[in-house]
Image (tube, rainbow, N blue to C red; front, side, top):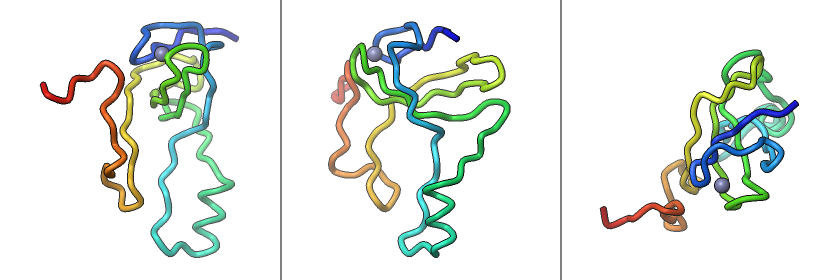
Length: 105
Ligand SMILES: [Zn+2]
C-alpha cells in the first residue's frame, strides 16, 4: 500500500521514501518499576484511529519527525519536526534548530 506522507522539509512524498519508527510513547519516570519498564519497552496502544508516530525520511532530508496518521485510512492529518528532549522532559542543551528554521526570527 502506498500513500503520500508530507515531510516537514520536503513536502508530500511517497511513503516508501520513509521509515516508520513506531508510535510515540511516553518515557517512564526516572525509577520505573519492572512493570512500567516492561510496558514501555514491549507494549503499544495499536489504536484503530488517529495516532502520533515517529517517521524518518531515509531517502530524502534524513529528518526525524512526528506525524498524526489515521491507521484505518492512512490519512496523514499533520506532521511536525520535533526537538530532542532531555531526560527531564524539557528541551536539552543538545536541542538544535530544525532544518530551514532561523533561530534569530
Ligand atoms: Zn524530507
